[in-house]
Length: 167
Image (cartoon, rainbow, N blue to C red; front, side):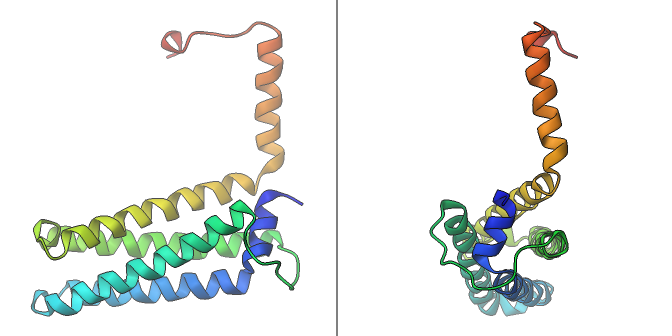
């Protein structure tokens, strides 16, 4: 079983989907609040709630990568379930990016009350993007193995170049 499938199975696709949708919901609420600067205190609370939700999701995923996730008692991960997870995470990343950009344009990244939470939201967004990239790469194990095999053959033939010489 591939690492991707094991991680999806360990987390449980339904659980991942529920947590991602919860995080998307929190981000959507943030987007509606950011547009109205009069709701600053509500925004501060919503930012903290969204960051907690994202931290919990990322902690669960990191636990699964570390092998600390409880064994899931459901069906095996399929290419469709992995693709659905990637789509959900992509939507989550887009929402986080949208909220951050709207906040930046509204001048909230310069406010002492919101800047730290917005930076943390951006960091969580970067972690989600990294996770998306990992899942997309892991969906194509044959291509990845072919790249490493080609590199190994080139090294054995002595086709190694200094990095500064490569354009």
